[in-house]
Each structure stands twice: as C-alpha cells, then as structure tokens.
Picture 1 (cartoon, helix red, strand yellow):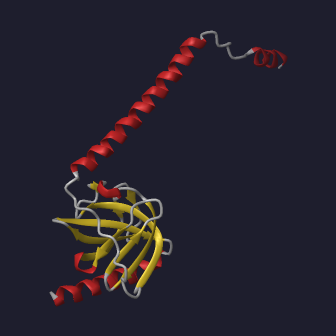
Picture 2 (tube, helix red, strand yellow; picture 1 turned 180 degrees about the vertical axis):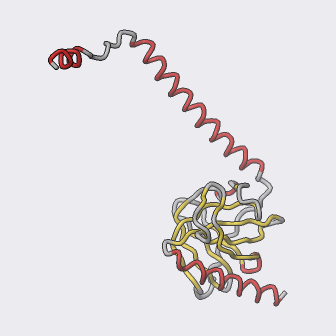
Picture 3 (cartoon, one colour; picture 1 turned 120 degrees about the vertical axis):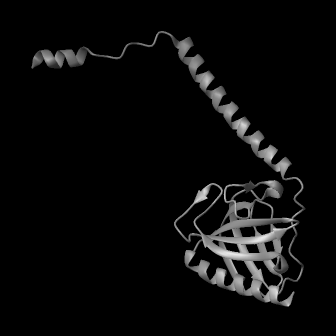
Length: 186
C-alpha cells in the first residue's frame, strides 16, 4: 500500500520546456479563428450586395391609426418567401433583434431597438402563419409567427417570436382577416 502511495506521489506532469512551440500553436489557432470570422463577415456583406436590388424599406406613416394589436418579442430575420434558409440581409433585415410590433389599419409597424425599423403597408401583407423555423432559428411547431409580405417584386417571410407565445394565434387570425378584407377591396 505504501508503494502505491509513493508511486502516486512521484507521478507529476513533465515541465513544459518548449514554450516557443506552444505559443506558436496558440497564435496559429487565434489567426485561424480570426480568418474564419473574417470570411463569415465577408460572406454576409457579399450576400447584402447580391440583394442590393431590394428597394429601401418603407417607414411608418405619421398617423398610422389606432393599434389593433401590439406585441413585444424577438425578430429572427427575413427570408425569401417559401425558402426558409434563404436569409435576406439587405437593409438590415438579416439582423436579429428585440422587436415591438404594432398592427394598425395602415399596416404592420416593426420597431427594432438597435436595428433598422421598417413598416409593411396593409396592401403589401400576403399571409400570416405559425411555423417552426426561419434561417438559423428552429423552434417547436407553431413557435414562430411568420408574416409574408411583398416588397418590390419580391415576397418576403419575416419571423417573430412573442415574449408571450399564446399571442401568436390572435396575430395570425387578425392579420389573415385583415389581408382577406384588403384583397376583397382590390
């Protein structure tokens, strides 16, 4: 028993004698991580350049009318409609952020602290549904409010998640009712 204790006490890690090699590996790894980050950033900027034909986002009218619904939560991004992995990054639509949504008779006002706000006119709204994912964010079935809207000649899906997910059903019903009335008036 004593010999086992002595053997255990004698085993120590070898002293590091080749500091230059270790420092070189750490610096190399740090440079590799920086390169990957830079390439990701350049890819994001390139995608924004490719989507440069997307018109400027409309801003809210000065008198949008009385709020039908309001919601606080998260904006998870926008994609080309029907293609949940084709993220749109032009005009800041790819940036996730907190969001305050307000639905009025004029349309959907999207206020994003720290990111570009935008407004979706009522005539541009096409559909609202519950879904489980949008570019880079996957939730449980029905955990994401997805609003489809027209901007220029492109249909866009924008994903939102309320702080109180029980609100999603009311949003889908109200938005789709509003869209059906707007289409009937055309």
